[in-house]
Image 1 (cartoon, one colour):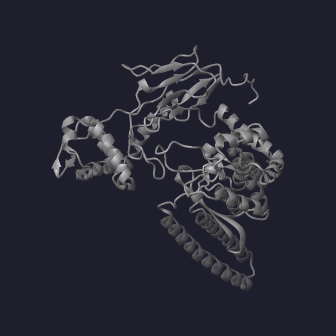
Image 2 (cartoon, rainbow, N blue to C red):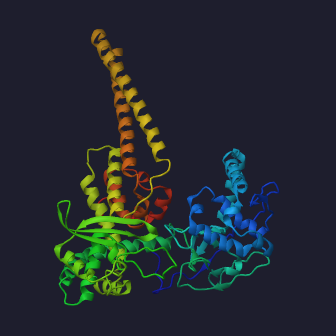
Image 3 (cartoon, one colour):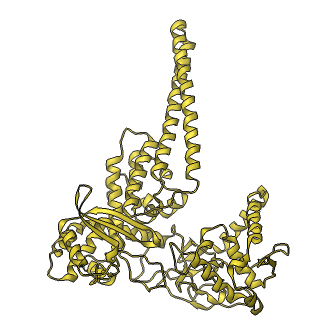
Length: 560
């Protein structure tokens, strides 16, 4: 941490690594695994067969029932076929992949049934690869690389109803790869018979390898692990920026409230949008190419159809009802009472507009971000999200933590504080498939524990009666040990009940996103130190590595 800093923009002076690991080559199916077209066995060419296996592996998934997925898949699959195959295979509904699908299921089962020795062998091989490819040298440090394996080919899934789902993600070859390292390092060698697309020596970026994927045309990178110095530092600076916002947030809030009365429509729209970003932690919402991506929006790209205005609703005045698909096609649905001025402005913004028109027609993200930058250096919509998430966690922990609670109860309070943040940021998840079953198992554990407690209490009662009669040391000791047993079982029962409450409340909320990306880890570290809670109860091993800087830095009196 305390090492010398480079001039602005320079990230390293020396960088050496081994390059990426490519996906293993395709292994054709055994002769006895058949593909059927229109009820007849058909032998596919290797390229066509490989793409068919991608579909077969997903046969039980609801994706393969979706019209757009099937259409995109079939179009891309045909590009891989020979001309004979193309003329025969004209209809996806006549293709029968069940035999292939069963073969892959059997393989998955076989992997589960592997002997300890076989599993150990695979583990050792993975560790060998990690040792060789999983580390790089950046300046004087050996740093862990996050994702040194290149994604294998497959079918694009996308999130929500992505218009490109089902398209073929091509195999990435060395010829697609740009290597980034320093001139004086040992440059990684491409696989025999291949060459790299390019070797660069750009020390203003931190990535080691990059390529362009064929579906969205987006650039993919191999980067350092979150536990590395360069990532930890970036993380730390992110929270320091959010803490700077804390100092001037009141001024900014007063400013946008003034702007609600502005004579300029543009300024009013900007001020209302900023109010939403601040109050509801909405994302800014960039403009997107139509038909290229799923129709998701953020604050600046909201359309008239995404909000409804209620002068009164459920006993509250001036309620705005939001309903739109946000990032990753996650639905944002919320009814929020707003200030009268905001409400009146929204009515004004919606006047004479069609449902598909922009709500903030005089605003886009670059206008908004330029304005935010003027208010505070480094300020973006995301900084508001980080600030509001962290400050909410800190306030909730203060309110919810009861000093007299035992550790499981305090952890429940922590998770409740984390949930308040996840709800603010709209981090949802579908209830896990195994949820009901897991809850039933937990409930039966609780029932068994209750019976055990009843037994222990009965034993204690009879031991007490016994001691009254006998009045000797032995029976006195027996009472003590039975008392302790009752206490121990009571604690175990409480722990199970807390766990059940926690799981139930957490059914549809994803805590991980905010924990990793929006919450200053020093708040959690300080809370653990203050209440004597082991840090591993809050952060797992990977998270502890990522937040090593915070664990090192924060004392129990840390204030965000």
